[in-house]
Image 1 (cartoon, rainbow, N blue to C red):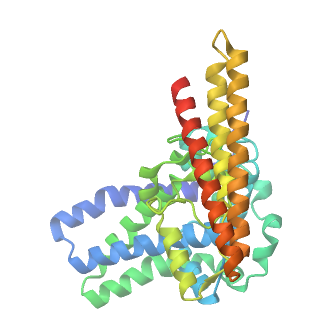
Image 2 (spheres, rainbow, N blue to C red):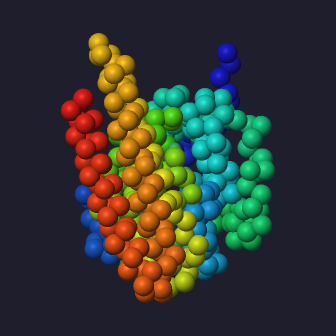
Length: 368
Ligand SMILES: [Zn+2]
Ligand SMILES: [Zn+2]
């Protein structure tokens, strides 16, 4: 089979920027040194460009996990140009195909089933899906966003301006143009490139699958640190419209914190969040599946499986009862008498649920 045409411009671009970051930047650092302002600008631009991808391109434009004020969208459009990962329209269109056909080799543009190299960067080095390149039918909603379309039409010069012009200007203010362009321009670009590319590559091979095993996406706390919180990719692939990727408060998800902070000052609204009950259910289903698999190899499998199913049904019932009570309590807000009653009821059901959950955990751990 003939391989698709090599996209030489992309090959040269990724190679030259990588070699420059690995050789020229350290060499310049040794000979010339970098000052504190240059390092600070580097860090600020790492977050500005990276989080324009995760908060803007990804959670806002690809998944509509919230709504954002035009000021925020404009900042994302500039930050996305700084990240040099194509226009938001193009990126989001690709990403929606990735979710819809995840792991299907001839459809998912960066299918992890085609290997680490392909899903990381290889997919951009050859013309794999030329028929889809300018087809943005799956992003019609974004075509109504004037900021998205402005960025799409002006992408190339915006990207050059942000990557060379901005660092050069900041360097001029600081008294050394070349050092700033090398650190806050070149090195920053390469680091943000590969860190965000990890979401397509590493986050589909390394980590756990607590919510679903219907695709290759993984949850990985270490990777979250490198990807502005996008390391909780197993959760993300099953609940893609949730504005969070790391759902617990201790999960490192600065993109979630940014969106939440924007909502406090009314620059972000309609933050979408999956009900806890659904998340809990997905997790329990995975535990059930794992335990069923282990039990099926035992001699008395049938009897054990029936017992497991019974425990599971019981737990599901407790879970439903508890969340129904919580919902009723929420709806009764303001009616003091009613609220008191429901409060006591919810507390009781909560206790029953957690009791059964502990039982379930002991039971499944015992089998493991
Ligand atoms: Zn993915
Ligand atoms: Zn996504």
